[in-house]
Image (cartoon, rainbow over all chains, first blue to last red; front, side):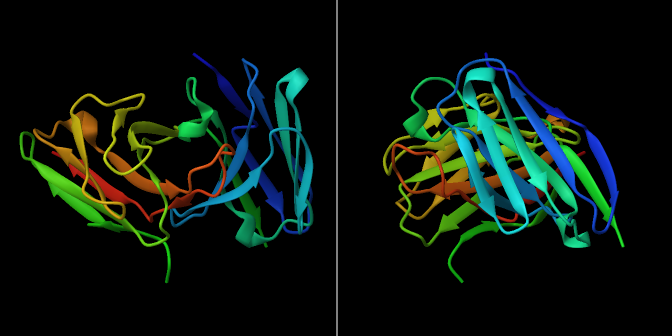
Length: 112
Length: 114
């Protein structure tokens, strides 16, 4: 089955710093998503990014499908950015079914 | 507030006991999912329901059953709980479509089996 590797596993930043999180995947995929899980466990869908670049405020994401990786950029980080960031790709065939395979995540801690 | 509601939020079971985790969404989504999250791991799909009246196994279905009661509700049942089922369980829903986006997750159920 498909493999998804995220790096780094842990990241500690001072407020205001920029960071880049990476997601590598082993097979070609027709979509990729980024999620944020806050320290209280709530999961939020950040981006649907099968290819190209998208931006939402201080966050942006880029997927290079031909090279099988995606990057999540966080600029001017804030303490509220803390939590775990997951990338996810379709699980199995039939991507319209919406089944997802998650990476292990990057644990981000932002200090004031 | 619109969203996905899970009950209970916390539960402790003894080995061998049974229980049902409830999930309801009020966004008129067709597709619903149950995931589990173990420490240091990503979420893993247990079961899903692509539409009302259908259910299918995900990555880790053993020891679980599901019911799609109606379009709103999708329950997960543990018939005989085992310590290996200690985990945080998340229910999610999304609208049907070619693009896999627009997921909404519940706040999770933290289950401990002793």
